[in-house]
Amino acid sequence: MKKLFVVLTSIFIAASAYGLTNSTLIDFALTGNADNLGGEGDTNELVPVAENLYNDNWVVWLNESARLTENRRNSYVTNVDSKGNNGAWEAGKVLGIRVHFPLAAWNSYALVKPVYELEMYGGTNGTKYTEGKGVIHNVGEIKSISSWVYGRNFLVSYFVNLQNEFGELKSYPMGTVYFNGWRQVRWENREYLPNVRDRVLVREPLYPRMVPSIKLDSLGFYRTKDTQGGDFITYVKDITVEYDVVVVDAEEDIDDEGTWQILKTENDRKQAIEAARIREQAELRDLEQRRIGDGTEQQDQAAADNGAAADTGAAEEQAQ
Image 1 (cartoon, rainbow, N blue to C red):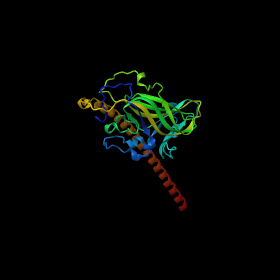
Image 2: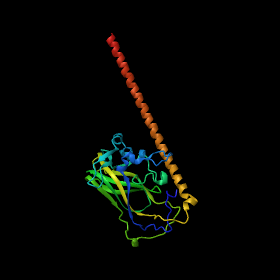
Image 3: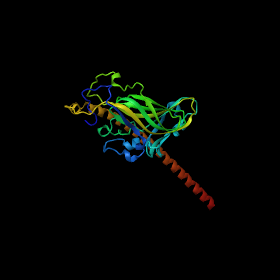
Image 4: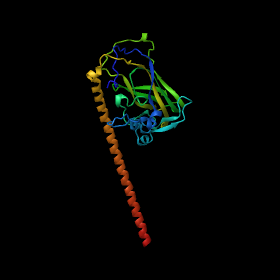
């Protein structure tokens, strides 16, 4: 458990920087290869990483007014091969996104997300979704967010939606995808102060505060009523975050977590909530799949019976 939550050091300056760090929040070249998404040996996990994060398993959620049958049927993601981008990255997988927006002139949006919400502290040592799989721990003030996106000249706005360790959701506008080909779009924190002398410095409580973290909630694509509806196509390679590190690793005289286990209790509570939600979604999807399967089998049986009856009728006609 000590590895799961880094014990905060003796003096934590909330606004101070220990140096900017660049970390990959999500890399769809990694999630596009199931061999990279093996489990960590946890036998009690309801949803393996591969099942959750594999590119083909992501889903598209449309806003309520856009959730027509045709739009839902034609809005989905797929695992796409990329030849690479002039040395920026090698050939590999990217996330292909198709959204069928309403043809009528009204505002609408689509959220692209994993089939199950990511667990902030899931798996062994809280690392189930770290290292390019949707979660970053030890995140202070965010300076910038960047993402490689392949545009097809659609005047559609792109957002990255993140949750913090308290479950608070924030959207970061990345700009439009009104261009053709690969481009690295970027959100810049205009209130970020690189000089520590310009910052307001305060002391913050240490243990048992959670180490600040972020996780990917979804990718958002927004289309205004003035933009042509119908099919929208784009591709996303990755999302990278530039931020201040909050906690510096240091040896402490006393193991707070080993003594009190407050963070473990809180972590277990959150994992129980996440597990219950995942179990509910898994059961509903399984029931729906079985219902559709049963319906398909009944239709196949009915077709077979009709075919047999037709053959019998034809045979009787020939006999006559």
